[in-house]
Image (cartoon, rainbow, N blue to C red):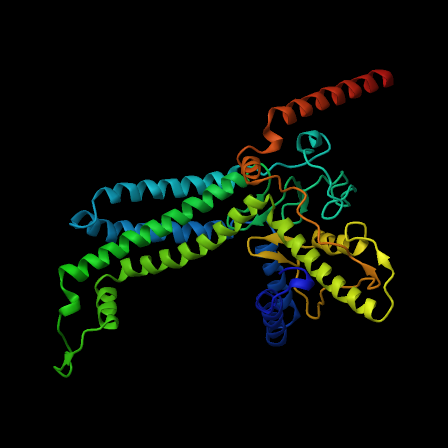
Length: 405
C-alpha cells in the first residue's frame, strides 16, 4: 500500500498477492475473458467514483440502527438503571450520524483550475515533498500540498486522500467535515456499546446470574456458573442486541484508531498524502545514512550535499504522484500478474544525506487546528485575491476580443 520502501507484507498480500491469485485462478478455470471482466470490476470498485461503499455504509448503519431501535430501545425504556432519556439521545445521535455522513459526502474538497488558482495558492514550496512544476495531467502549476486525484480526475488542494465510503476526495475545503464525520461515528459506536453493556450488566445483577444455577436439559446435571455460561445466556436471550453490541465495539475501536491518526495529522499539520511521502523520504534517508557510513569506512565518501538539495529524497517523495491515496493508505492503480514496485532506494552512497528535514508546514498545534477549521482558501484574503484575479483576467480577455473585432 505504501511505497516500496515501506510496504508491509500484510498490505501487499491484500492488495497484490491475493487479487493476483484470484485473477490467475479465474483465468485458469473460466478463461481470459472472465479474468478480464474480474479485473475491470476490481478497477471500477476500487479506483473509479461509485456509490458501492456508500450503499454498503447505509446498509450497515441503517440496518444496525433499525435492529437496535426495535430490540434495545424497549430495554432502555423499561430499565431501572439506564435512564429512558438515553433513547432520545440515542436517536439524536443517529440523526447526527446520518447528517454528518450526508455533509461529508456532498461538501466538495475544492478543485484547482487555472481560473481559481490564486484562491488556493496559500502555501510555499518546501522543495522536497512539493516543487514548482507543471502537472502533466491537468496542465496547470502544481500548487504546494495539492495532488491530482486519479480517482476523480481532479486537482485537489491540500489533498488528503480519496474516501471510498464518502465517494469523494478529501481536501482543503471538506477535511473539517470529514473529521467531524469520524468524530460523530466514533461517539455513536462507543456510546451505543456503553449503554448496551449497562443493559446487560443490569440483567446480570437483577437476575443474580453470578449466583444462579444452570441445569443441562439433556442430562439433568447442574452446570457450574461461569463467565462463558453467562455470556451464552445473555447472547441467546438478547441475540439481536448482542450482535449490535459487538458491531458497535469493533467499529468503535476502528474509528478510535482512525480518528486518532487524523488528530495526530492535524496536530502536525500533515495530510495523509504527506504522511506517506514522509515515510518514503525517511526510509530513503535511513538507507542513505547507512550507505554513507559504509562509504566512509571504505574511503569512498565525497562530502556533504544534504537531502533537500539531493535528488534521492525528492524522488522518494515524488514517487507517490504515481499512486492513489485512499482510506487505508497508498495503493497502485492496478494489480498486475508479475508487477514489481519501483525501487526508490537507488542512491549515491558517497554523499552525506545530511540531517533529516522537518515538516515545513508545521506552525504549532493551535495554528495547525485553525487551518483545518478555517481553511486558507476560504479566508477573506484568499477570496479577495481570487476575485481580483478573475476581474483582471476578464478585462484582459475583453480587451483581446475587442482588438480582434
